[in-house]
Image (cartoon, rainbow, N blue to C red; front, side, top):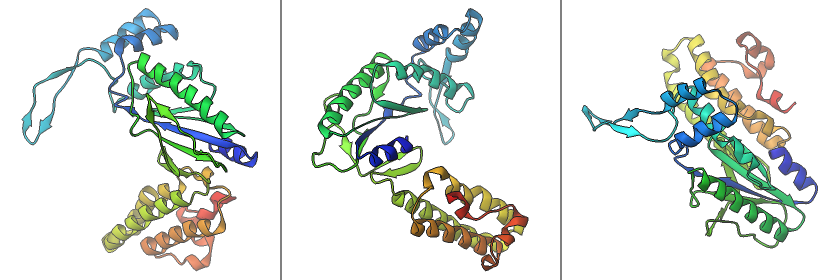
Length: 287
């Protein structure tokens, strides 16, 4: 998706992107409609009967301190935290790709992003609004509710006219950045805001772990570094390819500070000190 946006910017095109928010998506799946879709995908009667038993006759209640509410039947939705839940949800949403929209569509669980590019901002505005109507109609027909208040849009590229996008006659809020799957993507694709968010999380966790360092052996510190710090620095790292040297240096500095603080490593010795620990410099991401 981001590659498409970069190519559009290189071609002097304007891109409109809408991150659609669904209200309680996993809890709103219609069981009968899901089973009908599974049958259409080729599941036999035995498999359908098994999944029907899996989905129906479920009950839930709320525990508050030591008290419980009454049991209530679960009439729709897929079990969250289960192995089958996300798979069934993805199958339910799969035919959204064939709703008839002309814009591109990216689906990941309940995160739905649609986008289109054009040289003319007015043409883009018209076509994307038409596609939003198509998508909203599909969601309505499938008993899913679009949260028009939380849905956000972003426009990339040079433009003088600010487009208006609508969902159910509600104007979509346009922002300078969108957070998609935990990644903050700004309208200039610089990754500045995303890296700033990464650094805040990393330095905050370093501060906490530093206070505990004297209580932990080195192997535990290394495990915590790899578990709680490194994933922040490496998450969606291909998006960071091509970032400017200043941002790359900030990531490297954060990584070096973490290694020096938690593991007492002499970072000035270069990458050789990382090899025995199966670590590597963050700058390798940009190679």
